[in-house]
Amino acid sequence: MVDRPTPVDPGWLQEVKITFGEYQLVPMTASGERGIACQMQIEPESLSYLRQYSGEKAAALQTALEPLLDHLPYSFFTLRWDKATRAWHSRFGSSDSTANR
Image 1 (cartoon, rainbow, N blue to C red):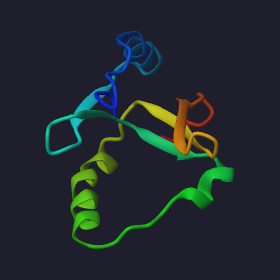
Image 2 (image 1 turned 180 degrees about the horizontal axis):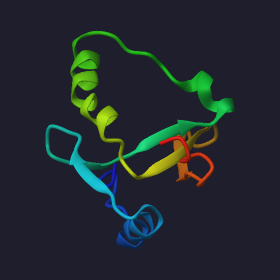
Image 3 (image 1 turned 135 degrees about the vertical axis):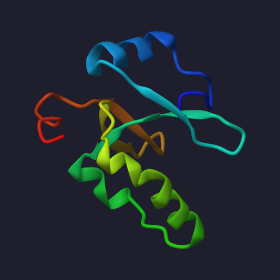
Image 4 (image 1 turned 90 degrees about the vertical axis):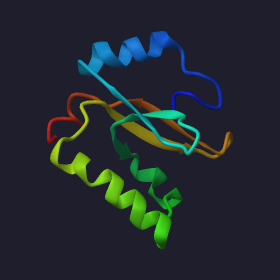
């Protein structure tokens, strides 16, 4: 998310653009708050924190994201779960991790 809980620093978005050449912001909430369309790689030690959801909302999310499989976003982030803050933290993916895009 780039619009909440507080708006992202425009300088960070500029870093994303410099690093990946472009980025795409898309509405992600009913009220129109945006997030960055990206590829994400979860660090191995954080995989146990992922949860699989089923049901109507999960199916709608899968349908909404499916077109991205044909046109992968250029932005690529590596994520890890931080137990202390109970939040996901991201960093720009390295050129090694984006080689298979």
